Image (tube, rainbow, N blue to C red; front, side):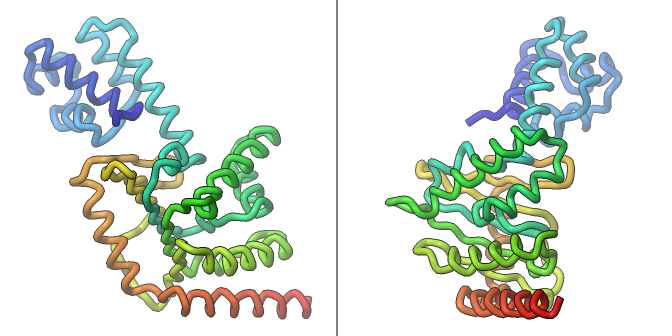
Length: 268
């Protein structure tokens, strides 16, 4: 399967192979470092639009590479909002680690809307994306629900929604979802200490036996189906799961949080 970024990288590698040039020769012509060009060709990084234009000039490809770069860039931006939604419908199982917000697949409508309002979106776009996010949750409760395991950092649960009612409803939803067949929720308490996962991670295992990993930063994300990249992330996820609270303990943790929240609101 080839994504926008993969298509761009593949085209760069193909054009150089077709030209007969080595990376050293290409670096001399376009004035970019050999290591940088290698990472572009292998999909290690997207690079800049200026690099795409320089390579278009070297290969005589008009604006082909620049257009592919923009396609890949747009895909990256969309992925920050949509996650792996296009692939979840064909998933056998999904594993996710949430660092700062409740996982998309476990959000309520009000909580999702509050989160999306932080992005530069119109009201219409926000409404569409909230609906799309809720539609994705059907994979967890349909006639053949996908197995879903979520590791939720305690920081997520300490960072409440702005609206107290929205947060109460979100906690209630998490408690309910944690008891759905096929859904496993693990709270990662602060006491777990340091670990290797530093950013949100979603692992999707497809029915054809392949797998995808998506790691997300504040302004960019990285999607890969390369086994050499996916496997270390899977191992790190499993290690963190082993140190997290088991589902029964996590359910107790969530219920305690809801009680505490109700008490705080009663005193306010």
